[in-house]
Length: 147
Image (cartoon, rainbow, N blue to C red; front, side):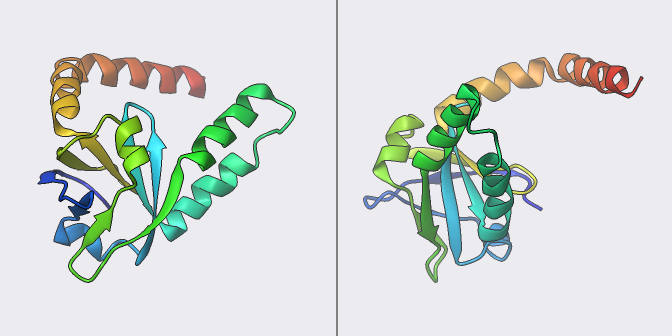
């Protein structure tokens, strides 16, 4: 399980050093995808395959499904974590996620998210202010769905 937030810097080769506590949970082959909220997600091979199979199963006759598939698969790259825990992030993905030098690595239960530190700080500030409101709103939606 991936939890917590860690600050790192990209090196000159666009590599990040993954926190030691996360390395053992990842396979040597990982998948790096452009994700929602201007972040990149890093998946172990097993977790990526589950997500990819679900997305691939979406209806090809539906325009939104085709668009989602195209964006997801076109913006996913296979990577490998080296012996010292470094992972190279493709420059195209860094550009699309507006990530420069300083990054935040965030645990998201079954995967990692990589954000521009500046972007994450401003997003978390707002989200933490709305935390109780969001929890109450989502609780209401879940209770409504159960009725």
